[in-house]
Length: 158
Image 1 (cartoon, one colour):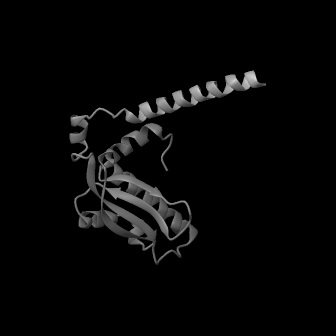
Image 2 (cartoon, one colour):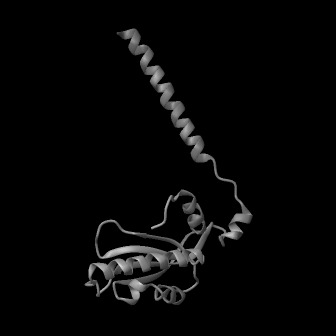
Image 3 (tube, one colour):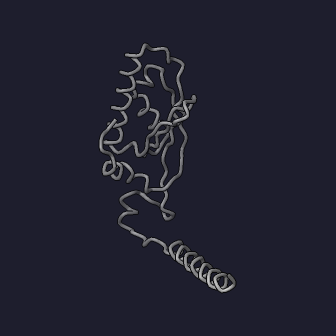
């Protein structure tokens, strides 16, 4: 028993230390700065970019019949697709907890007013089913690449 213990403890220690060293080594590896990509994505020296974040909230008019609500949702999704294809909407998605906060948008625009004009094109906003709360936001310029990458992952569109 003592001989087995004398073998197991040093072996486990060596494995744990080598695993820790490998993990530390991968953390220390910094990606190579790509000035061309940074420029294409509008990154500042920190790799960041200014956006407008929209919080989609349940609006005051949510009493549509089932068919109307379904049509508004379809039109809402079509509007999201249009804005994304135009390159002004870099991220969108619903919250999954069923609360009053329904989803988020991240717009690649300079001002809250520009984002407001874009949100006003949404049929669900026009119907009062959703309302938007808009905020200037500073995030990774890499977000602008999300839609292209998402297209490579998605088997179908909503």
